[in-house]
Amino acid sequence: GESVGLHLPTLSVQEGDNSIINCAYSNSASDYFIWYKQESGKGPQFIIDIRSNMDKRQGQRVTVLLNKTVKHLSLQIAATQPGDSAVYFCAENPDQGGKLIFGQGTELSVKP
Amino acid sequence: DTGVSQNPRHKITKRGQNVTFRCDPISEHNRLYWYRQTLGQGPEFLTYFQNEAQLEKSRLLSDRFSAERPKGSFSTLEIQRTEQGDSAMYLCASSLGGSGNQPQHFGDGTRLSIL
Image 1 (spheres, rainbow over the protein chains, first blue to last red):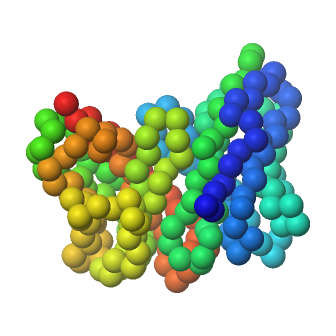
Image 2 (image 1 turned 180 degrees about the vertical axis):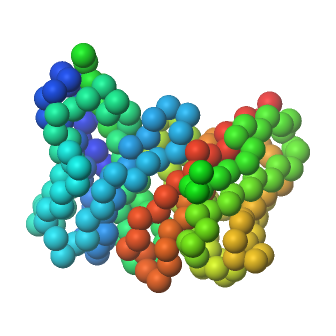
């Protein structure tokens, strides 16, 4: 079936290093993708989005890369901080409707 | 706080009881979504509204589940005859409407525990 998946369930990085979180999606018709950050006990927090007519988008300390050829999405976090520790989800909109399909999530742990 | 608001934050009930959750979206958002999230998993889509109209329902939404958004503002999600498997976090999100290509902003959810 259609799915959005993450390559690594956990990622541990040193404070100040850059982090890269990867995501594979299976629906080639998806044209909109979002990264969310979820802290314990809270709802997903929007980080950055990208449409399929782009291959890169930058925000504050974050960059999302989209490779439609291999159906791969990544989130890069520069100068990772302890406050970045959370679970990160990618999500896709498969049919221009309302629903998002989420991956399982990657837990990012930042060591001081 | 002008974000998405969900109430209650926690709900504990006995199996077989009915429960209702409320979601107040960001005021200018005309789309409202419900998701369910179990431990260690990403949110799973349940249903969404554009204004008052319920436009899509997931097959996860059994006949025991019903959602309403009568005036196009707040929404309620009701679960009748709750079962153990209904224990989960119920998340609400809202977005500007028009297409699916607008970021959905989530509330902090209602955690349901079935005894």
